[in-house]
Image (cartoon, rainbow, N blue to C red; front, side, top):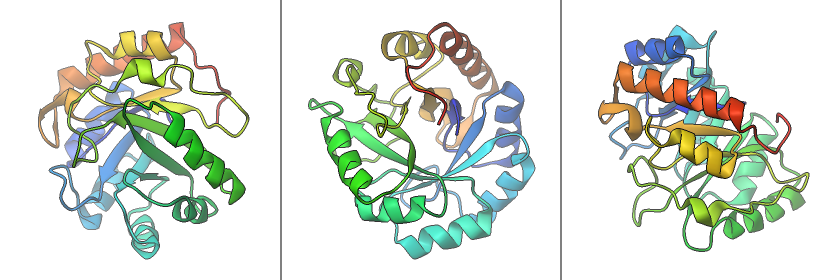
Length: 227
């Protein structure tokens, strides 16, 4: 799937810059209340500009299955990221059609709710390629810049049906190397940590983030095989 994702892309020029910097995925946000929302029409133009170079991930919050299928078809997405409170039944159904990444907002209970969800998902015979751990902020679904509770994520299990995890939540060029060293995630994801303003990426911050993440992922490889 991917190792370094820059999420909340809203412009073609930013997508091209992110691909040039070496990230291997971009996130296109289809949550209408997000400041990083893009319409399917705009997302198609962005995806068309970079689809030969990066994985195009569509980020959805509590969507209907028909909405996801329509946007995937219209935009030409590679991966669906479910970033809300979606039931395992929706994720399992979609996963038989397109690669699915489920996001979990981490609180004091850590990864345990995610594993309970994944256990149910496994019984439904879905295929989860990766999960994403983000910071929990009441009333919000992500992109807040709040740092996830790294200690609460330690000990995430490694059974064959536990997908590799992507770390998000307040990651910046300054802390991404430390986060990778502490948790050995499969990959990392950032939005606000490399922005001038919501949806407008800073080329210097993106380049530094990718450089720091690449070096640390090489030095501290994940504990899971490639999904």
